[in-house]
Image 1: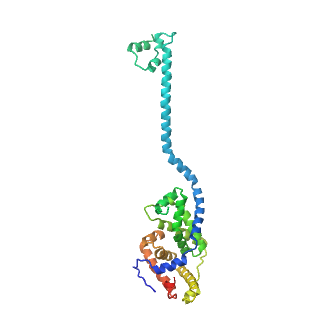
Image 2 (image 1 turned 60 degrees about the vertical axis):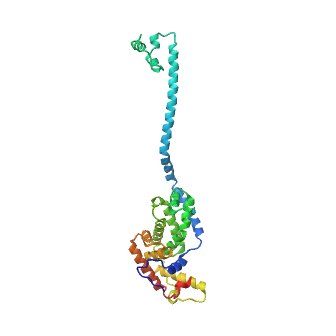
Length: 128
Length: 185
């Protein structure tokens, strides 16, 4: 019979072989399938967590995308408002029922595409 | 997935990949079942405990440190599941030593002898402390190092060395009547 010392650091292959034969159970494949089937329930338990996980993962890019969309909408809205204001001031400039000073109201000056003359600004401010 | 490392499979399984988890189960099924049987003795209880261990590992894959070996981490969970099951069983069903353990010997019928030898070995194992038999099986059967077994059993490496030594010695004494047990299989 083989003997070992407390300082024997190598596995005993003979003992290992007989222990393996005595302890090994049959049909590992069937057992693996059984565990895999039971694991479905565990994955099911984890679904609520995954819902939050998905939200967390998407939160940052979602916020960035929302900000980009808002910025784009604001940009296009700004252009549209600018065009509307421009056409309104043009219409006002051609209104024959209004005096020059009325037609040179502050909103019209602000909507103008070119800087007005100083005299015109002063006239508008004095209400002439 | 056969070529993937355990840590990679564990990460995939944690992310919800069933195939990765299945691969890990396939890799460790023989070891986990043997370990559970070492602790519990009864094959059905062992399978239940091994399954509990795998499922507990799946639930806690987020706690696995991928820089460390997966085997000891998993087997520790399986060992805990088996120990819990044994405690719940309350009545310890120690296998009695079969009569042939005392008288022993190799007969003419080789297959019957091997069956009796396996019975005798399981009975002899059941005479050791749980820690000793786990240490011997993980060291001599599964090939884990003393340090890794220490992780499984949550004891210092020196304690594992002592358990392996004393466990082996006790097994040899219990199997002493099987003159050529190490040549039987």
